[in-house]
Amino acid sequence: MDGQLQGTTKAFLQYLQIEKNYSPYTVEFYHKDILSFFMFMSEQSIDNLESVEYSDVRIYLTRLFEQDLARKSIARKISSLRSFYRYLLREGLVAHNPFTQTSIPKVEKRLPDFFYEEELAILFGSCDLKDPLGQRNRAILELLYATGIRVSECCGILLQDIDFDLSTLLVHGKGRKDRYVPFGNFAHEALERYITYGRKDILAHFNKEHQYLFVNSRGGPLTTRGLRTVLNSILERSSFNGKIHPHKLRHSFATHLLNNGADMRTVQELLGHASLSSTQIYTHVTNDYLRKTYQAHHPRA
Image 1 (cartoon, rainbow, N blue to C red):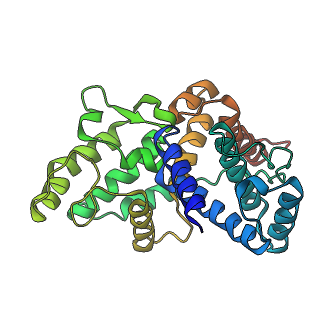
Image 2: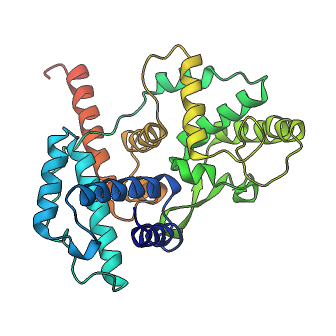
């Protein structure tokens, strides 16, 4: 990559981090998508971003399909590059956006994967509460399930964000949008145990001091990548055979609320969704749940 492309890319990524407040995980995907397109430009002997035409984009799209990539991955790459060129256009670095006319492949809508309550009980029970890291792991599980917060939101929690008197959490969400989310007795107990004993022991052992709620095994703030590793380790120690990822706990939070009678608007606010359409996918899950329940219990189903 020449110096001009490198500088432009760096400026765009800083824009995503600072102005759009995107998580490091999201910015990393944007970076990879842009670098992939730069390789294509090199192969096509396209010297600069201004020279890219709609016909080039069509060739690039064909190449992506030839790689047997999932439609979701292709859609993300095109969306990333469209945003990149929109930024370049705004900054006066190009005169047109060749990705404007490109239609993003329709992505098959998959129902959110969630845990049943029995499965969650297995995961919660696998945490060793006599061990500081086990106390941390239990607190992470309880809080993610109790609040439905995102991974980046979880890792960004500071001690002063927790109000134990009201059992509420101040969450710093996407786009610098803060919201208050309540948590229940199980999360309350797990957090108090972890903060009073586990967290204090880990920080003292490594002579660390900071305000981040969740710490890694060396006492530093827990990163999003580290949190995923923690969840995988919990799964390995349990007798549960399924898969786990942070969003599965978020999906479980929303699904269980709706299954137990919560209204859509409330769930939307708790999840921090900007629009109700993002929350409505869970109605498919709950409708499926209702249908199965009906078939299992109605005498004439």
